Image (cartoon, rainbow, N blue to C red; front, top):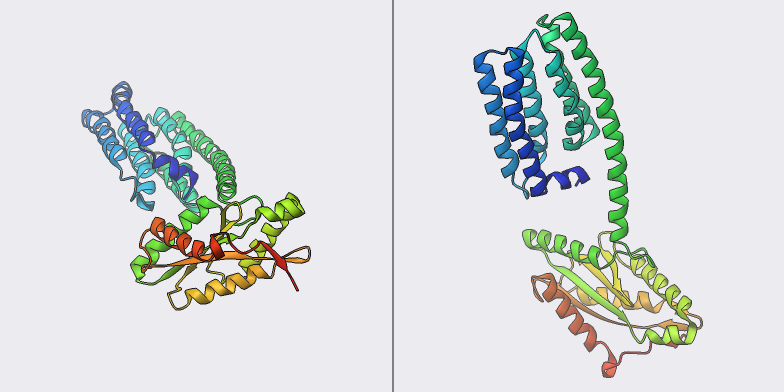
Length: 335
């Protein structure tokens, strides 16, 4: 989701926007009166602007889609155009309103193409009294100048927002990645599992969650050093990624724990997957020693329908995989 759309979905932001609409109503009433607009226009236009504040304030946060982000700038363009025709031929002062439409269009648009399309529509509405010959010469020149300024502000806003979107995307990616291994972290794991659970519940398909813990990993750090321990974690991450399918998710929630989400994997295939992952971990070496791990799995929906229950079931199975409750040695003779 675009950064700007995340901002617009915030209730407080929409309340502020609705307040601005409400404040514009008396301003429009005063301005239309000073410009000599007809009595119906002086009453109807401010009233319409005031009424527009209601859907802006009450917009549904969870279901706001592309239509909502078209509607807001569309309404402003429409009523600004109506206002220009209401005060024709003195359209110059009203044309200034269109300058402020450009940043709104860019923020609300789904893409650059949409932003350009909406700005083009605003330009057409803006120039319509001039094209129809309903504007005085000074007014027409003001409208043309305002159109140029509107496009300039729009393009600058587009560049700024694109940079902000890129930075936000990079930060979001970093926030979901483990710096050491490059795998997803706990946040990424939780979000991905929730997404997959919803999808599999809808489709009635099974899913397997595997929890993996390197046995006695402290021994690696104590005997070989922390740098070697970090190397082991990176190599385990690589081995796990190479061992799973492209549709599977491998994550490192923290420490020496790893998790694998395997979509479309049921109870029959889960033990096969666990042993496949065990062999992958066993292929990693620290010096002349191989790495061992304890693994446990849980299958949706049989072992639980919620993520918390699946983790509990997988953790319980993993603890049972540790001999004598202490686990196999993290390092074992390769030969």
